[in-house]
Length: 269
Image 1 (cartoon, rainbow, N blue to C red):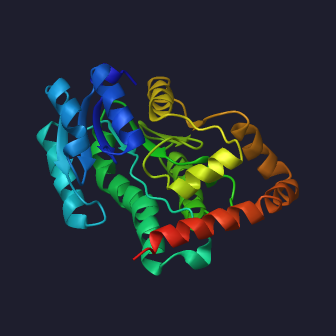
Image 2 (cartoon, helix red, strand yellow; image 1 turned 30 degrees about the vertical axis):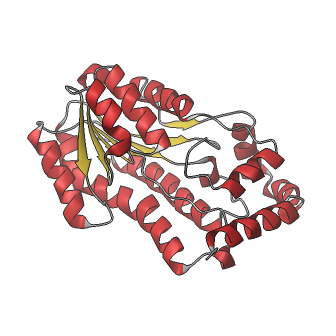
């Protein structure tokens, strides 16, 4: 896809990865409808790229707000690129999560991209060339303790992307699934960052992820997994899951200890 011809709806545009994607798209000449509940973090980009960027305030868990985004897209003559980058995460053992936390992850991470994609498909099919981009996670391929609910949503998003790609195989709409590894954003709690530090995990900055997303869109890729050795672990988990089980079991004491610290922080009076 030629990015200078891209007309984009980008969800999660005020977050770390979403904001970096918005900037990269505008810098390459795309026209972007940045969807986010809050405008503040987008202000510098709105000032820098007034001809390319427009904010649409919306809570996409409400159908009325999804319709609002659709109307905004119709006003610019339609779109040919939908990027589902909105997401929420909680580092916690399952029994530490409230039902509201679980339901929020299910709604934002999987229900919203499915429903929004369904709403935009007629418009995307009218374009000469179009694409749906779903921003997933390495944890959409490797079930990781402390992230059970989050993994469930990202596994679902990966499955949705694969099935939708096959469903649209005889159309001009492509589907790209992007799986970042750990990324330096505000979505990471101090405990999650402490776990990454303790395990010496590689952590990318949002601009690195955005660059990979932009390159994949321009190259019409289908799947992108960021980072080494993360790509290796994804393959290893597919081939030898018992080996990964044993490796992660050794990390359980550390994960439990840090998740309890996170739980205590979240419940301070």
